[in-house]
Length: 306
Image (cartoon, rainbow, N blue to C red; front, side):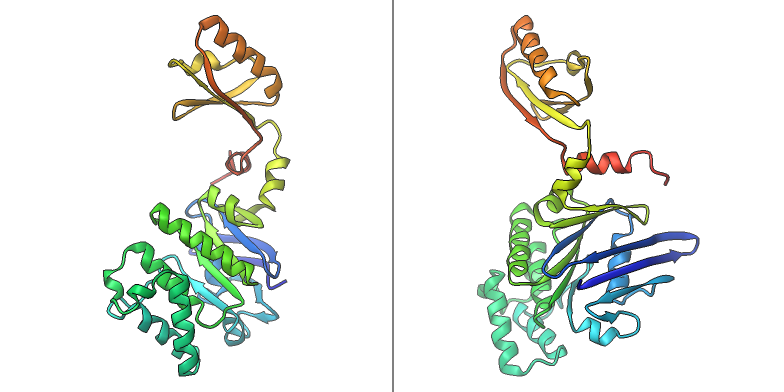
């Protein structure tokens, strides 16, 4: 295990922001902390990277306790905090060179490393422009490249695509996969369920400072019963209340389609076809789905005490 967390607790005044959590991250894994804002994800990362001292518990990076051996632990990691920023009055190239100098990388090697990262992050053509002229997505790429200047074995990413446009978010996700394929272990936080589903080998679902489930996204989805669904679209508009057939637990309108939740989709499909025939309203698309990671999250967090 390259990250090991044992009974971590962090309190702010009377609030337990992180409440006795434990988990392990395997070498070469993309591990996600998934939860809404205020779940304790960022506080957890700040304890793992030595910014916050836990009230209780321990966190190990490699073989090093982050509190007892912070220098050795930090030499293994690259960090991209949620509110990070590059030096906006320096160019992208000089930001990377500065970071390389801080890591003690000799001059020729840090120039070569900076150039390679800027090419990989599609920033080489703008390498000499000041970062203040960059879009948010470009700034995020600079920050991620800075975190990789020391050949990090472990990368901590706090909401790496938050607030980015679709193209920038896609590029960041592709780069995360690329570095993971090269053996970098990645721990990321996200409130974006689809992002966790796309990127993570395993996720820990956090809610109100606690971890309430840890597993592969596919296994979490498989474990939830009664959340299969049918997605249907009709040629003409439909009142969704007319689709609340016996055996359907919930109906949601999603764009021009309806999602019917049911334990037995095989029983509801003939009813939908019969409804279509009776109302002379043609079905133009019909698909069945197993539970999504969003369904898992909603089911696990529903009704929990705040």
